[in-house]
Image (cartoon, rainbow over all chains, first blue to last red; front, side):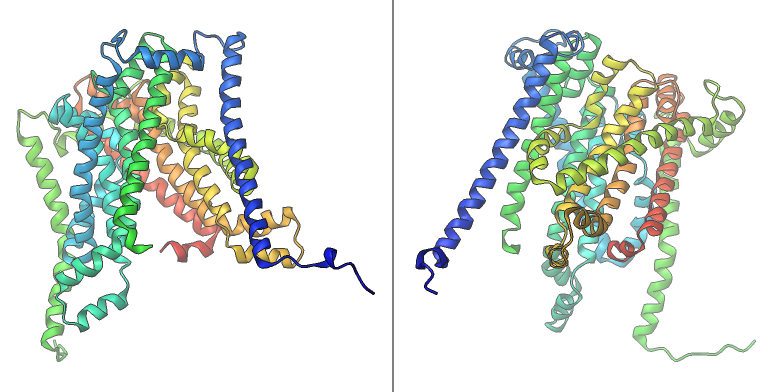
Length: 280
Length: 271
């Protein structure tokens, strides 16, 4: 039977690739549109629910109010006593101090504990005793130690970020491939050289995973610390919003805290890509 | 008494000696920690509580309860909030995680909103929630719920969407329908990820309940800490910190046991 050539003709490779690619692009496009629609719908339902009186505007502000407040708050210190910029700077100062101290102290500590057995059996018990105590519960004790200033809050943030840094550096360096270590030994490297040239680079992925967790912890603990004891900062701002019964200030604070958190994570991912580029 | 003497090379002697030292070091470090504590408390200026003071405070709280609840009563009050919140967080979180991990469209719709909510630390909701619901039992459970929900959803979603391609292909070869693919392939193979979420959510829940109680409560260990801080009773602060640490540690052990019972095949992987 002489079937018509056109209908049975197979797709050439190029055509197939083009077809698959265009399909992929179409689904990706559809999914992005769905995401945008989802967010817009959420905001719209929220706005309408308040606008129509379904939710009382005394308790829930409209999204449009929050956006307006975002612009006003840059220059208006009422009612919590500081403009938005001051709050953000004060929070950043505390969070970054604690966070970087945690990395500088925690990562080397974890690495040394993971590599040198004697150091491990010395430090491990202390670490295991202090670890299960949540950082927030250190607040009263730190206040007696260090007073109410930057140091106390930075210490609490430090403690919350410190634990994941140590744990990940520790497990990371423990997972160093035995084969690589043996190669180092055969080539006559000293224990310390193996630690520096083989152990640390191979623990890098885990270390970065730990730093990512530490960042989240630090930011979350910062908010708690500022809510309990502070006179500036984003946590203080939302706590004051509660005292003044201003839900729009609370929501604005929450949104800014969330946004800053996302920005930090993004920066960290960039840094990780730069530092760990050789691994991929 | 006759003692058999083994011949040991120099290297083995060294090794034996080192092992003995390693066994001795943990004791030394704990002693050092205790010494530091004593040193910190012996300075009269610092008002840092001493170990003996904490022990006395412990005996005192056994006789004289605070707000009609003994130490165990307060611990139980906190634990009850955590357990209620965890029960809801696990059921809702696992189902929602499966939904957005399995269905791409659902992920596209709810994913971004969820990510936005996840970026906010759970404690930041405290002012809003107290404004809406007052400072009763419900708002605290709600905040713990929010704090415990996030890790469960994230881990479940990651587990479900990272099921090995081969497993699903085999399912396709054997003509599995969508329901079988999900319940008989995807969920069992994601169980260890789900359990990682459960583990994280338990420790997160315990931390959040503490903070929520510190920000306003009439019972629970977090309340004890704030009570100690407000009345200058720092022994009470330290005592509650110790209790919190111990309970947190026990919770972690219980979850680990649970994991070993429910999915024994995952323990090998996590070690």
